[in-house]
Length: 324
Image 1 (cartoon, rainbow, N blue to C red):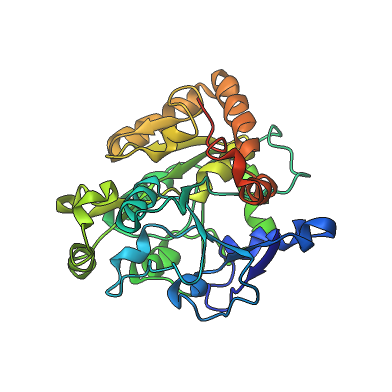
Image 2 (image 1 turned 60 degrees about the vertical axis):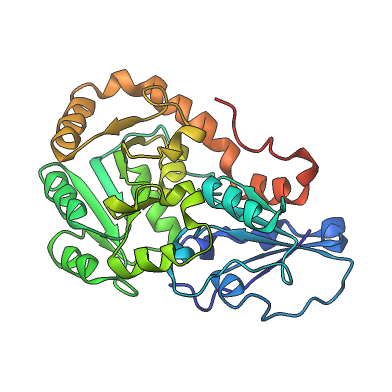
């Protein structure tokens, strides 16, 4: 399977820059009759590229789903551009297949590219980490709680919203890290916090509700709470580095498609619970060895190399989703 990416419209330092799926498209695989494409601009512009051969199968990896449906335009009409679309939102895949009477949208894990030379079970010097953007007041509350421990907050200084800018000034410990530097920092931490959701504003909700049969997409089943699900790569990254995932419990809990609660990770339900769970884990850290090992073993399934070969050999579908 050949690979083509277009990342010029992506924010420098985001996960797509580190996937490098082209690395696996060598030798005989390069001369296969399928092409894998990734990069948001391909989705945004639809068929802005031209198919070089009609007998090729054109595939697209979508790691933004379902955020694109918050836009005014309906970015999904890929019939003329892609034959298969691999997305990280199972609800949107099902919804789009229903709209188009197709099976072209397929649910996939978020592939990660953690360096193999890092030791996930080495000594951890920091208590807790969050790496990413700040998207609502609860994130600021989270940072305030984290700051009471030996914490790390890593984020970027470019392409960020006003809340992230505020947090950058007040809480950031590491800024604009390279992918390898980010993984190295994460590897030094005991606990990683994740929210597998994103907040919605009024205009985004209005845009969603202007989509055909929007209410049949279960990702939009709680718009009254101004929130939607999106699985975050940091969950797989933490698991791959022996870091305990502390994940907010939400209306969808996408993480349970890949990991088991209390066996591979822990939930928190609110900010008070978050503080208590951090303290509990730190006070009993040695007792979480099995959880770290269990999550690490499962994370080995969700690598960028496996994603390449899973997409290249779709005859095995949907075996790529771990049965837990």
